[in-house]
Amino acid sequence: MVALNITVTPADDLIDVPRRIVVTGAVPGGLVQIASHTLRAGVPWHSSARFVADANGHVDVTLAPAVDGSYGGISAMGLLWSQTPAQEGKRELFHADVQQPLTTTLQASAVGAAAADVAETTLVQRLCADGVTRTEVREQGLVGSLFLPPAGAGPFPAVMILNGSGGGINEPRAALYASRGYAAFALAYFKAPGLSDYISNTPLEYFAKGLDWLRATVKPLHDFVALSGQSRGGELVLLLGATFPDKVSAVLAYVPSALVHSGQNACDPAVGREGPTWLLDGKPLTHQWENNRCASWAPFDEGAPPHRHALAMLTALQDKEAVARARIPVEKIQAPVLLLSATDDGSWPSSVYAKMVSDKLEAVAHPHAVQWHDYQDAGHAILFPTVPTTQISYAHPVSKRISTGGGQPAANAYADHHAWQHAQQFLRDALAARQASLIRKEVS
Image (cartoon, rainbow, N blue to C red; front, side):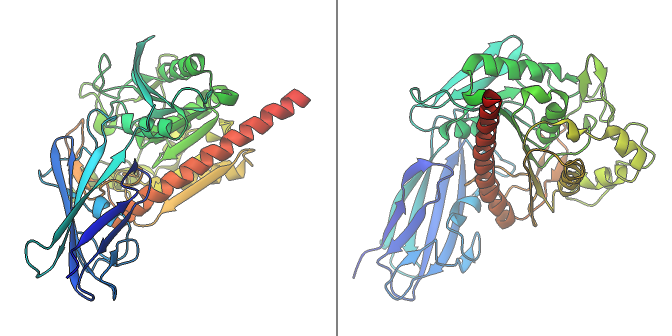
């Protein structure tokens, strides 16, 4: 009898690289179970699925549907995105040191066979390619981390990455951007060393300083500096593009808002969730909840679990005058714009917001590329491949309120994969357009 064997190709690569998982040596037509185990920030995450071996005794996970287990149907990376944590409530997907790889053990066994009929291999995922460097930034009042691609091939285009209402420094996304050839600056603006614990009363000038610092430090290729942000960061990058258009070369807005919002779940309790978030010239920007005749927290506060924050946001949209006052003037952006939204967003109606932005840019005949991808049945957490997408309800990192981000694991995994592909192509196209524009200026 041929012994079971399991292989992964490639076995060790960046996290966004698809893998081919193949089992050989099974009984033709027999059931094969594959289990995964990954240690993420000290917590074990697990999944398992069963497959029917083909006539040759093979299971190719890229082609074979899972007939039972943590996910169903065909998904090459289903064993990873369907993982759940051994400790309830844990959501950390990466090690604190993002330069340390994630190692997943894959174990294949023939269902109903002897215990000895087991095969094992490892799958390694990296956020940092060889040669990527990380530098803490604590200067000019800025708090963040700068990740640079391997030396020798620069200058590099740059991207500044902004987190959402959880705050902190988004090192995983910055590390992966650097691994794909960008000088990536993950800038914190609250809930990080030396900064406020809350989003309330954050001055926009802080981000202008961050953009200037990034340009001066890395001297980017074609003077290209993009902004990437998700959730409140998605709102923020649109706002920054409109406020400082000469500093922004491209805008990537993940599950964004079209409107300026109040502090909400990330607010300073002393200011309140209906208090201001953003300041400009020391003055608070008008936000959606301000003097809104229809806005109510009741659908969120009093609704049946899992609570959906988006339901409260929908009430505020009913006051058209308040919406108009709080609208981000995206027509002032002088750069390409990428919008990534989700139809089942439980945090706020990102599909509605993205349509508002797209419609406005179309109405003014925005002279740069505008792309909008709206992911059916996906929720608020659009990240990048390939990460677990199962932890949909959670306690907010600041308010500790438990709510749902919405979506289904398979739909969220699809959004993760395709959003990252679109983001990479969008940046390549935006950089090419920037280069062409500079050449035209030189010629003229």
